[in-house]
Length: 320
Ligand code: GLV
Ligand code: GLV
Image (cartoon, rainbow, N blue to C red):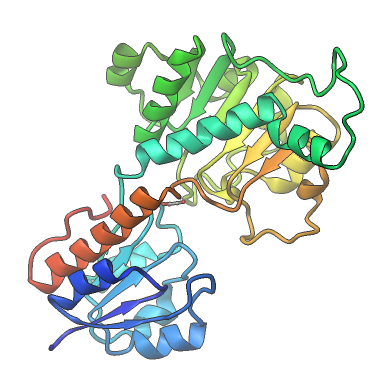
């Protein structure tokens, strides 16, 4: 075949076979290890397409090395790992995998919310450590979810999924978004709040806004200070949307009740990171969209985007 596709992580055969209908494929063979920078820079040189992960920095140096690159197909809905300006300047398409992960990610967000509120992981550890000596009236007592106020920061399609779940828990649902979403307000009975009011009113604040230069540390000491001492924050977008140092302080000083974190400023997070030493933190290794079915669909969609571009069509799900 004339064209070459670089796949930056081991992916199942069905995905590779799909790519092989249009292209030769070179794949980094490891499942749990990100591609080495050296392998990436070398193999991207003559690649027409790259199927990338959110762990790969597709930056200027990378694109300068890539003499033939036509598409970066990220297997993620976020694309803060890609230098978009550089890609645009070079006429390289960028595609992502939106929508197919919405419900799976909303499930995880809600799971984290419940885990923090009712201290589920902490309770499980407590029991396994042999600390359960007697049922007791306030043992591991947490916060109610049913009837509480949910605040969604960044009302996109994942936010809608979270709101739909919250309706089943009779939650009062508030949101803030750069642009007001009157369609969603009508459809799901959610109400718009200013950014600050959202922090003041919410019992559970779910962060879903993408990471951009404008949303870096969008939530810091000032915002955390607006929150109620009984309120928790759930982050399933990108770690850097929240100032982690300020979050640690707020949690340590019990200015807020808890945090459910699927994402961190540095991933993987260090085992001895101060946040992991706090009982009121539920921490997960960035598994928001990690159901087998959804991850398979994401990989297939990334491959389909590459097939489209390498056969001279537009990507199916480009960034907007
Ligand atoms: C996951 O975080 C994604 O962006 O798909
Ligand atoms: C913040 O909520 C945003 O989406 O801009």
